[in-house]
Length: 136
Image (cartoon, rainbow, N blue to C red; front, side, top):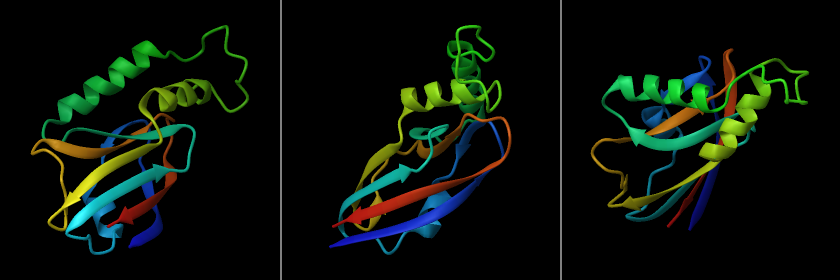
């Protein structure tokens, strides 16, 4: 059986935001065994799985990404939407637009210290649309 739902998540602005519980609130009852595909419908944000306990990891990741892909580089030609727009597109490609998470015994089968991140690469608050497909 396949169940698909679309929902929105509010992003407070640039950063790596732990959204596991918010995603779970929007999902249907999960099967005993299956797969969740989570997809973000945007080109300046991404989804990832990483550390869910220490907020410092999320702060460090933001610093790393801002160092790797800097704003206001003179070689950017896509600049009409602001200095953070082209870097946001590049960062979203590096992280990715979707996740596949196994479902076991009716729960997401992630590690103890894993959580779902909304990786927001634009500076200002956004509403981000996600599609969740549960297979199983």
